[in-house]
Structure formats: structure tokens, C-alpha cells
Image 1 (cartoon, rainbow, N blue to C red):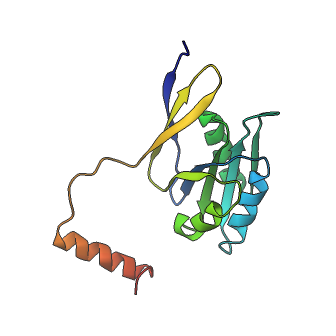
Image 2: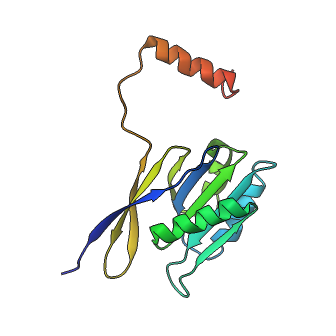
Length: 163
């Protein structure tokens, strides 16, 4: 019988920073994600790390901001699941880069893209670790009323995402 263990890994998200966590499948992911990010938003600051699942099984990393690279490496090591990548960004929003990330040929999917506190649920077997899911932020406290609908719509227009 295979033993299965679960672990919750806290992923730090510093102020004015967003984290994106996804799954991919090939060593060239680090460089391809670098290109996708640097060409998406002028002036973006980022760091990324990718967990290899075979061969040398190293955490590969790229980026243009040492602090964000270090955060990404620490988060990837903490997760420790093959083919998982972690990207930290500043001076951009996930909405600005997600389509570029998803269009990278190796990317399989995205688990989370947020500035909220994040917990990653990891399962571990005798073979290795797997990212099972994420906890993004906190549990809802209620349902928006008409006033909150108006506030949401006004906010989106204020920041330029709606006409």
C-alpha cells in the first residue's frame, strides 16, 4: 500500500506583489516564461522558479529582480512538486501577463494568480510531491448588495478596466 501524506505550505505574498503558480512540463519553461513576462509589460519586475521532475531535478530560476527571484525559489523549494512553477511580479498585475503565460507551449495550467495570502495543498507519496490545490485569500463573509455592486463597478471604471 502506498502511503499518502498531505501538507499545507504557506506562500508569502509581500505587499505590492502578486504571485502566480502553475504547472508546466519542460526545462525550457524558465527561459520561455522570462520572455513572456518581460515582453508583456514594460518595466515589469519579476522572479520565477520551476521545479524539474526528472533528470537533475533542480529548481531552475530566471528574472530581473533579485528579491523576487529569491522569493520564487524559496516558494518552489517549499512546494517541492515536479513541474510546478512560481512567478512573483511587481509593477504589473496578473491580468496583464496571464494570457502570455498561458500561451507558453509548455504551460499546462495556472493554479492561482493573486496578491492575497496563499496556502498550497501538497500531497506526498513515496515517488514525490504533487500540488493538489490552493487556498487563495479568505472565506467570503456574505453576498454583495446593490450598494456593493455599484462600488465594484465604479472601482473597475476608476482603475481603467471598464469604460
